[in-house]
Image (tube, rainbow over all chains, first blue to last red; front, side, top):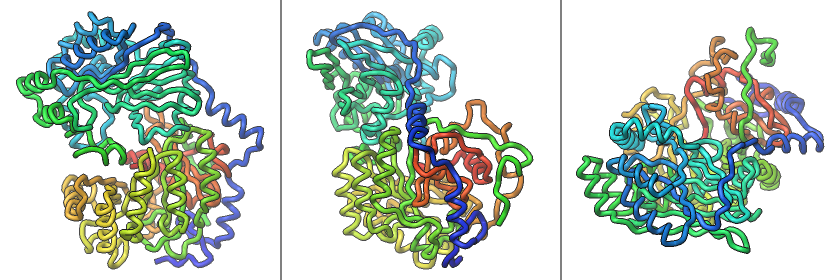
Length: 316
Length: 297
């Protein structure tokens, strides 16, 4: 063991501690107060975005992650209509996990669902070999590969081409609030914005940089809502394709309404015919692990990506 | 002392990496002081290494405030051994008010009482708290030559205490043994974790950096192990952690957790001084690029 008494490691050498400290003190920048303010301004400068603004609406429904669950999508369209949503928005990931991907297409078209691309649509439309979900664990990637391979084989070239024409972001006005709708994050289509790893200062900066009063995303598959100190909202709208890893079979979407006092955000549980879905998945030869999730409400795959807090609340 | 590495002394200019976003902020919270002296430590930490000193809660607090202004997303604490820092738990409590935190520990100071307190801290925050425990072999014969005699059993004891408290640690393994990163090696670590009561075993495998103690143990970098401007991938350098991280020590802000023993890798006094680009002129940068390394979990 190297004894450091009075010495510092500098690269591969031992040097007197004072030499290291002196060299460090001389290195790097020490900006003036004015320069620091300018550096922060440049760093946090809003990014240009020419996305047209849709609306204004007074009430919209927002969901993502259909994952081929046409039963869930039918139930969503009925529920959103019943609750008076003027427009319905889908944040992408139409495929994966469930059976018979082509079945969701006519539902989306007939329901006038305003859809953006998720990583699934981007991958399918561009002929990628994987879903680009962003998993890091071999088991998660194995099951993601089964989902994607199945969906890619079952989707017609026409459906894939339609996916490729979908925008990657939308800007939507609800009352006086301008909301940015994206799949993962405004920075990356497959970035995970989990509640426990998306702190308030980070979200405030993200909304500043992308000039919006609210952000809606879905990629994590878990629903949450955070009202920021600035009064703006970040909503992970939930997915209607599979349960929220909470031991119930229901799925989730978001209702946003313009009120006098601002934006009202409601996360809505949705019951659908999950047994019919499970039966169809089995018929299609999809993994029993997926079917178990539909029937139990607990995720059996894609678990390694969960942060500590979300994983602790998980059964597996 | 070798001549400082600058673009002038290199045959070809090193590429520069822009800071895309400052997502990850590291704290060298225990300085280079450790209760172990692992033979592969790329920053040569030991009980007597005071190259960087421990940070106080007040120092951490100052950087946390800057970090909030810049929208930092997550915080990592390392050393040395973070739990040697007497203020470590207060630092974690403070940090968990503003974002998720991960502590990289050698596991030796994880007694049941501390694990219970850490569990309470995790439960009291809306943000995630993760603990990463370092181990370098699946038995004493493979671990102890690297981390020190008797450490294998003591590390396992720490992991067991975490599991008993209901915390699910990530085992961090460096590839000092070729098998560690292979499927069979990973299985050995998973089995070991399960035997300790960790039912959802998690593993982070890191390559070795041929600097610090590791250079002495297994050899330093060779001259060809450098990045050149032409090495830039088509989509840029975003895969390098220095495009989205900085490292704070008691002496200022460094580019990343690897290079804190290189004065030339110090970028400024405060975070806001370090938002500019960094020249990838150190051989360790080659490792990050070649192996796709991120120190993050």
